[in-house]
Length: 142
Length: 152
Image 1 (spheres, one colour):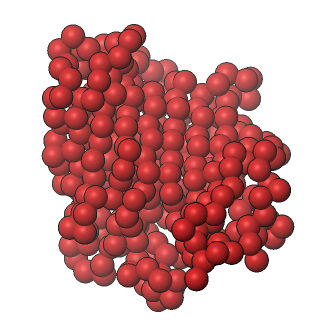
Image 2: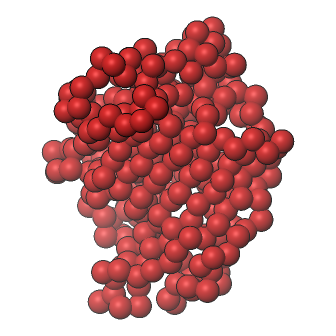
Image 3: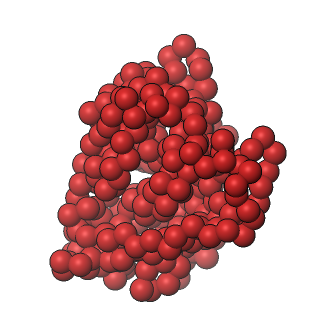
């Protein structure tokens, strides 16, 4: 694997993004099919609200995948992401309209590590606030 | 019914082999709206040093649904799946998953606890090729909202 970013060219504290990702109901339906996660709270407003959610919510894994795009597009090789973790701190509520929700993702080079690896701290938020905490990707740079 | 903490430490049966196809990677990448050519073009992936198209960093979750299916629906566990949301997720990649891989995973129950009225189940799986090459480790925490015995 070959990241297109060199470890030598990266400085701690450097920022990546921000970048916006639209999340609409149709995206959740597609993700249900592709991932095999058909949990009803991701496509049925009636059921979502009956279990105390404000509305249909995005799969956490869909949000995690969007946040990963910031990192994979930056480093040039998806295979360079050697570790990736998140905590889901707030659901991404996706209303039934044409715009859906907007996820804003940004990253920061948190630390340069051994073996030409860097830790990227990732933040993701919607209009309701931050939706991920402790989100980090460990990336193998060239 | 409270969640059954007796499951902590249990190792479950390995998943049936999962064959990673180019079309499944393409479908998954399209579903997350990611047009990275390494997910659809063998040439683009090879230019990055991979043998074939690679999967996005979160692709292994496709296997997770199968891996945890029998666990989360086991009536003896007592997890109310209708109230489950995803709490935490981690992937450790030994190498990128790529088309042609035939993968098996063995799920393990790491932890079960109740906190602030929620039941929390953490499980993990080491995913390897059929021949035993380690590929990925995934760790997942599921949260059943408001189902703990101390929930008001």
